[in-house]
Each structure stands twice: as C-alpha cells, then as structure tokens.
Image: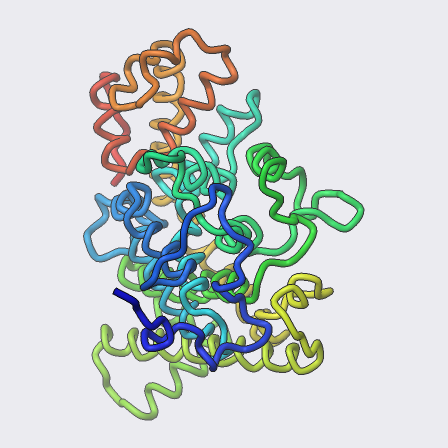
Length: 405
C-alpha cells in the first residue's frame, strides 16, 4: 500500500526557509530507512517519549523533594511545560514543531535525583574521574545507555536532535577552539569524534526555542510552587516591577479574587508576555539576518530566540528572587544537605562493592574494571535513579537515612 506523505501533512508549506527540514536531515549515526507515516523528527520525538529515561522524570524533582507533596513540579511536569512553550514558539516562527518539541522533551534526561543538589554531589565525587555534567549525561543516555534496539545502543536520534540536545544553550566552542563555558565535557568530545555536532556553531532555531522555553517555564512554575509552599508571598513578588504590574492588572480586572485563581492569572500572563517578547525579538533578528537556510541560523553571530534587554533584566530579577527566597532558604538547604549525603554515601558504597547495584546491566563485570571506568558506571547508575529509588537504596545499605522533609 502506498501512503501519500503530503496528505499526512508532510512537506509543510508553512515551514520557513530557515527552519530545520526533516526531509533533508543530516541523518543518523546508524542509517535507517525512512518511515512512510512519520518524519525523522517525529520519530525522534516518539523515541524520546518511549525511553526509560523519560519515564524516570516522573519521580525526579526540581526544587521540592517528592515528600513535600504531590502538587509540586517534577522533572516530568516541567519537561511537558517546556515542550508546550517550545512548540508555541516554533509555530509562531514557522519552525519544525516536532524538532523543537523533541529537544524540549529530552533536555533534562541527564539530571540526577534531587535536582541540582544531586548533580552537584555527583560531580564532586566524580571529579577525580572527569566530573559530571547533566547535558553530557543526556547525550550518553540517548547514544549509549538506553538499551532497547537490536541494531544499536541508544535510540539513534538524528544529527539535528543531538545537536539541539548538546548546543541548545549556544556553542560549546569558540571559533578558535576554546571552551565558551569552560572545558567541554569529555563524553561530548568523544561522541563528536565519530559524529561531529559542530560545537563551534549555534544550534537550530528549533533548539533555541526549546532553550528559552526552559527559562520561561521554570521561572514561572518555581514562582507558582514557591507561592504554594509559602516560601514566596505576593508581597515578595511586588518587589519585581514586571510581576507587580501583572498583579495590578489582575486585581483591576478581578477584584477580591481567591488566592489560587489570582496566582494562576499572574502565571498565565507571565508566560504569555515572555513568549510574546521572544517572538518579537526573534522576528526582529530574523529580519536583520535574512537567513535562507537552517545553516544560516547556525552560522549567525548571535542567538536568535532570546529575550529583549528589558525582559532579560526581568528574567534576572526573578532568578535572583528565587535564589534568595527559595533555593537558599534554610529549610531547602537542610534538605539539600541530606540529599547530597545520600548521593555521596551511595557512590562510596557502590565503588566499594559494585554488586550492590542490583539492576545495573553490567554489574557482573564492573568489579574487574579500572577505577575510572568503574566510577563512570557507578555515576551512570546513580544519575539514572529517581528520588524515591535513591532513598530506598540508601535505607537498604545504611542504618540512618537523612529525612528529606
């Protein structure tokens, strides 16, 4: 049976000339035949959703540990919100929505249990062996650690999806080969030896949309979760002119609105204004650059999808408030210390006796490896844990487990 790809919506005439084109993709590390019903970027997105790493995001936390309550964001709910914003930006800028969504869905795969606390702790214990970087870990997951397909390790994403995963926050190397944000993690350099992701260029505009969508989503939902937890108050939000303006607008239109609805009305306006700001700036930069291909975006001198100077200042003000009022709050710092202890303790236990990693697929071979190779396996195992699994593993191995409440 022959399937008409155009009847399925393929070859979208609304896609801009500077958008990534799935029909002219640079391909996959392991060549595969084309699908008659899905573009390569659709297949990437679908593969990402069906991974073990994606399911684990459900029980990995952002800021508030799972025991704090079921209504706070997890990595999974955050990822879904990022994907929604990325897709909205992609549609407005006439990009490939599937690629933007795919990059958004995969961007947090490498995060450890317990948010950035777990990442910091794992990086500390792995420093003698090259350290830990969640972006590099995401790449390792989709190119090596997911073990699902008969023909290859990983999930064999297209070059464009891998590029977006690695470079969504900008080039990793300058044109003279220097690291733009410090040394490039070794796993990324190793992969680029066999599949060059061109670390000295920007990523596609789809990946840039996913990156700025991440900022928009977590700025908004950390405020929402902060208000829910009581660490933030409406009076604290008044200190930021942008948020004060949104609150005044809601109060004028809806006097005496209950707190939960008032919060939602602020948050939805915040997302809308930030999205509209990015669209406006992106359109202005596209008008100046006049790109005729996705490669013109990659070779540009600056990022295209970004905030205006005014919104960038607001973004920094929000981040500063969240850092002061939530991330460094004494209660959160106490919980973070306990979470860090769990990760550190587990690393030591698994290095001493790798057979304690009961579900690791290489557990019978790790003991005979060199120390650095063994440490990387332990790091992979720990990074893949959910919060709940890490706590239960610690309770099994130690007499006392920190209370993360």
